Image 1 (cartoon, rainbow, N blue to C red):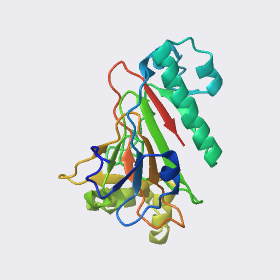
Image 2 (image 1 turned 180 degrees about the horizontal axis):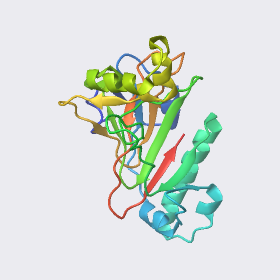
Image 3 (image 1 turned 120 degrees about the vertical axis):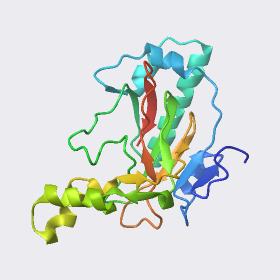
Image 4 (image 1 turned 45 degrees about the horizontal axis):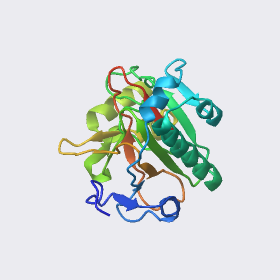
Amino acid sequence: MNNIFSDSSQIGVVSTFSDLVQTNFKGEMNALCWYRNLGGDFKEIVSQLSLEENITEVYPEDLIALKLSEKGNIARGIILNDLQLLTDFGASPSLNLLKCYERDDEFDFISTDVYSFHVDRSPIATDTFLCTYHGAASDIIANAKAEQKILVPEIRTKLKELHDGPEEEFEDFLKENYFDLHYQAHQDAAPVNLGLGHLWRLAVDHPKQEVLPCIHRAPVENEGEYRLLLIC
């Protein structure tokens, strides 16, 4: 399949939902992309939805109630189908209309919000699925091109000062505050933008995971534009 993601050893590309959920991660590959060129007018859907606070969950009945053009109706059908596919698979998808996520500005030397490169962690075997239909799309980065922030000497020193407790409890402190989930990209790193319309499956840190978790981040939103994002 000829597309912009084919050249990355981190990314596997599939052409069906069945392949997306059944293909095993292996080696450096910890991201799978169901590559799609979607028709339909997703902007029309966004323009008719109402935002409450900075993030609003959109339910199937909200979509069904919209009065849409032919292209808007095509876009709605795609979203509803994606939600159904994931639900039937056993996932719990959420469709979000969002202006922005909450920022973490508590510390000036480390950030733990979703705009920072990070991995997802779960106590059970699961994966992260996401698709951006409208607005800015997320980025991923190769694990070899990033370093855990807690291993950066100057950051680690400041975290130890913040901990101010017994040395043997320091690693637990890092996990309890999610500091260990966040990464700093190398200067020569080239993040891959996930684009619009593709449904992605990203590896999560869990006990049965055989590959490294996928490092990703939320994008800075485009000025005056909402994102429409499916995630679970």
